[in-house]
Length: 250
Length: 322
Ligand SMILES: Cc1cc2nc3c(=O)[nH]c(=O)nc-3n(C[C@H](O)[C@H](O)[C@H](O)COP(=O)(O)OP(=O)(O)OC[C@H]3O[C@@H](n4cnc5c(N)ncnc54)[C@H](O)[C@@H]3O)c2cc1C
Ligand SMILES: Nc1ncnc2c1ncn2[C@@H]1O[C@H](COP(=O)(O)O)[C@@H](O)[C@H]1O
Image (tube, rainbow over all chains, first blue to last red; front, side, top):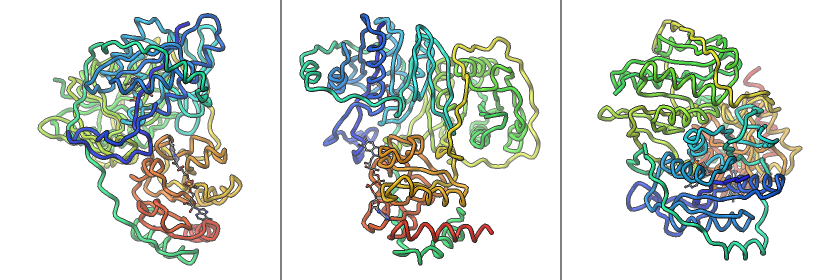
């Protein structure tokens, strides 16, 4: 079976955000970019599934973006993915623009099972997987913490408020990975060396409509510095009073 | 362009969720500013408080009814709601950004050939267009955007928009039977988690970090949460140590929360943690290191030992309630 994983290339979570000169995006100067943390779970699940299926299964990793995304694709290759594809576009795309390019490629590769991260920790939309699935008319389970494939049949557990939904569906399908699904493997030295030699296939991202338009990006108003009202339990009555009378939250 | 706003209401186990009233109220406000009609839709079997949306200003609500759709099905719900939206020619759809809303909105968007903006914290009308603000980079920045599609879908972050009582009447309910719903994906079971309340839905969260020293000591966090009717949250350090389950993790790779009150106990306030909780209305920090970054976002702080402060705090809150 052909399995795909879609990966995004995002600022390290420790990044302090500065607004860029265009006032519409961040200033990338000095920012370290990494593979989106949730996409590591997606890569791991794809590799595990391939290992279970055996035979001539293949894992493709796909990313939409600029040349910079190759670093993230190499990371996935180093973990063990077979082929990497960069769908190139130097202009930013919204979730629909990205999904359109991914859907086009997934279709032409003929991948029946595709893993996404549940969310890209840059814009935090948590929607590209579902959009891609709808565009392809694939089934889709979002925010998955447990995944089983038996022939064509999928049983997946999805995290929702207060518990987990157990969902049954079938291939072809998109699964979006949540932390807890697995423990992503570390790339071995051998894997890293092999990944360096692999060719990343580059092609222009297919055209797709962007529906949203950014007007501006701002930093949130800084929070007013608070008060330290004490250094031990003798401050508790004062704290309770403030919460009741000033904040009115208890 | 269609001039109708549709609030999509969410039910669980036959009751509308609080965020549905926030969505209804937001839809009513936008309808006024856009001079548009407003109505609501829900999917399910029997919903005990459906007519209550009337109190928030929506007089017409449709229940898309099927015994097969009592529980969420991504395929069934998206098909039923998108068909209904087409039928009434809805120009805007407003949903809560819950697990269900975030799953459903992008699917509706593709089916309606529209765009969607999720997890919005502000929706304003400017020159007949809805302008949305949504946090990005887990709250480290805000993005102002608009949609250019004919139909526009927005999901609102729970607990941020007010559910304002603006009507007095109960809404009129029209039931529409959905025969042969699309059940390509269906929920076959629900595994309830042990915690009483989920951080994503709680109005108060008591969170513990590595400063709690052990899983055992989280009894203190649980007792405080109990007396406050709060949910238990955790830092990633604590989740990685296996003291608490991942669903309780707050932060950039956990949950982004905005409760009325967030109490951080023995949490340093790493940037990834702050990202997930700094939009809480009030923040209390208890940490023995007065230089800890958590104090930079806290409204009230006690620079002391959690094992000294928490037992007294629990007793004081108990007294309040007795
Ligand atoms: C990719 C990535 C994603 C991440 N995502 C998240 C995330 O989503 N959420 C998250 O929380 N973190 C996240 N982190 C981790 C983050 O960087 C911090 O490591 C983590 O938040 C620290 O947790 P902590 O505050 O509990 O522990 P520490 O930083 O060790 O802080 C413990 C605090 O307890 C205080 N303390 C100790 N004893 C006592 C006592 N007796 N009484 C009072 N105070 C005491 C100390 O002064 C200290 O400030 C992420 C990191 C990475 C790399
Ligand atoms: N530019 C991209 N290229 C490939 N996959 C992407 C891209 N952006 C997002 N994704 C995938 O979609 C998931 C959800 O992203 P989002 O909806 O942006 O939060 C991510 O975890 C990735 O798996």
